Image (cartoon, rainbow, N blue to C red; front, top):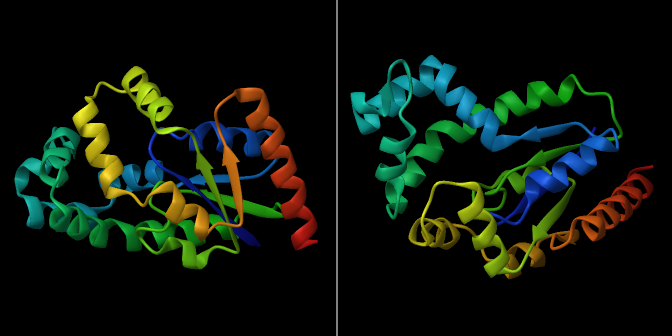
Length: 195
């Protein structure tokens, strides 16, 4: 089973691109979603996050996201400590998931594929890009957030240039129809490469 990493900065449109691959019959593992589920349901993660951040890490028996966001916002040490707790669990969950799939390849979608080293487990990497102003506009529309918070997240991620340099494919996600065409072309190339 070939593993294709799908990454891109916040607001680049990774989810949109992932859905288009999924429409072509490709199973998608969205690492951020699975991490959130594991942070809510894994007793081991819960115990370690409470030890790191205190009892307020969970509220009403579920992850206290605003509290955690505050703890890691502009604090790279706390972010790294949290990632060291969560990412190994996500990696083992992903391996189990891959073994259940029956497709020519699977996509692992992760905003921080390079930052957390997960790219090393991928056969190919696709980076989704979009102009920074478009990304910010999408995020302001989508999330209840501020430009300051968006910029802080962008600052914690690799630049598009750094990601592109280590990627096998790039999809520029500005206009939906063009993005769909790029997804189809990329899919065809991957299928040919792994055939």
